[in-house]
Length: 248
Image (cartoon, rainbow, N blue to C red; front, top):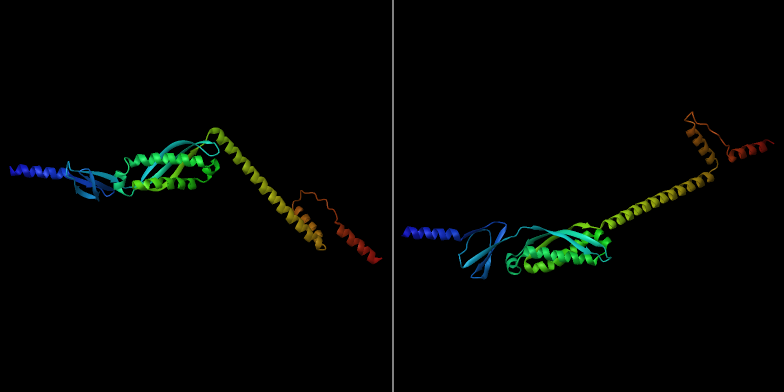
């Protein structure tokens, strides 16, 4: 008789034990009322009178599916994102919201559509980090009351209509051509300035132009197949003319 009672007690005791892993917290309810949060280890839960809900406190990544939205400049886009969050207070995550995983995902979807509608396409494509931060701040303001901590929000993809993609590609090509023309013109201006400066220096120094001419002839004459037509500079003719007048 006593053996049966002991065996029954042992079975009830073992059936009342619950294991909480290191990455979990146990939210305990006694007769329907919240009675505390249990840390990792083996915990005793009295059947019928008590209930424990395990909550995973590890960081989770939630994919926000493609959302169709219209930007402020009336461009239709499809935007997807990913949210990283973790449970900071297990009791509030169970008591304050029915399904915190679903709630975070839905709130992120509506927030993302609203934010996209407030910006223009250029801002959406060029300032993803800024927009992600705005989404994070808005979602965090609501999830804090649920015991949820939003760690990061990343925009994964911004899909545009095909005609808009072609338009943007043409704009990018035109921009590259414009920059190439500007760089080329700046190089020509710089070269012209240097040539003008060199010409002024040669003109200011007597005989410098003649020496430069001789140097050019020497460079060209290195190839025997070249034919050189040499025009005597006016400076040389004037020098001969001056020598003739001195002899007279």
